[in-house]
Image (cartoon, rainbow, N blue to C red; front, top):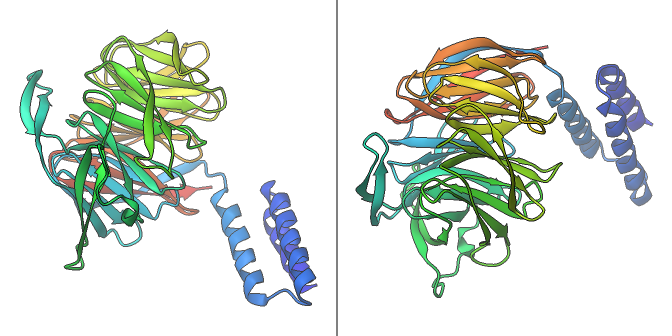
Length: 418
């Protein structure tokens, strides 16, 4: 059969290097066998699509060992952009504009803004972090975000509103027109290339004072929110079919200011960086209670986890990153960074760590080895870089970095080396 001949070509080309080719070939064979039950010959168009899909899947899985910096692009964004987040496919990036009181939706291939989710401002109380005092401000200031339910819901924390909102990114018509007894935030949907505008009222789900990081469990059942001034972690149960789409089921007190959260779905634990102290709080996800504290260096801000049970932490005041054994709490190795490391993100293969250094106006890039960090690059990003997320395909890696004071997004492009 011509179909099997093409499959054998794929296996021959990739099988020596990629064990996944056996699985792909089995899946392709199943699809071909299923189709022949319905018709005598397998459609050439469908076969071609399967071959392309299989090839693309194998290509993305290719193990790259190095990245080479190629260029930097700078896009105009909004004032005070605090964080950025790609959807799962990497086609769209969402920028949380704290001072701009909006969320921008960027198209990754064209670098253009597709939509702006603009909040209607209402007076509230904010916080002056330099003066360590409350100030007059507005409630609708987006800080961080995460996606759930196949990227259908974008959860956004609002700095001065004491809670989070769900944005149904592509089906805002699903919101009730007049929800009873539910706090809402009015959002205008602006299309930069069109005079058309839409609007909706998204529910505000109260969590705690000054919510920051939001993250979710892999099964899309729960959200965790770190509440800066409440010294708490909110646990929410997600229900994508019932308005307001989530509810708080537990509130966990912590010792001091919490910020970064990493969830270990394999072992049903969560790790919370206590930025106001020198510890990482361990939560038991079965019962959603505090289990332990890992004693670490001072002022841990952001925290991520790889697939081998290692935690990576940025220490804001110390200008340092660390790798920590999640089970024992032992610090395995550290490395200095530029001033005030903030957000950190791992590459898809977990071998490279990107660090935004706020007052250093740099993005540091490290290669992670078994025994330490090796710095590859320090790339200037003026305007106080704070948030970063990564887009990858077979050939390149792009780090999209938002800078807080100049309203820009820097795209750092790296070539993958195999």
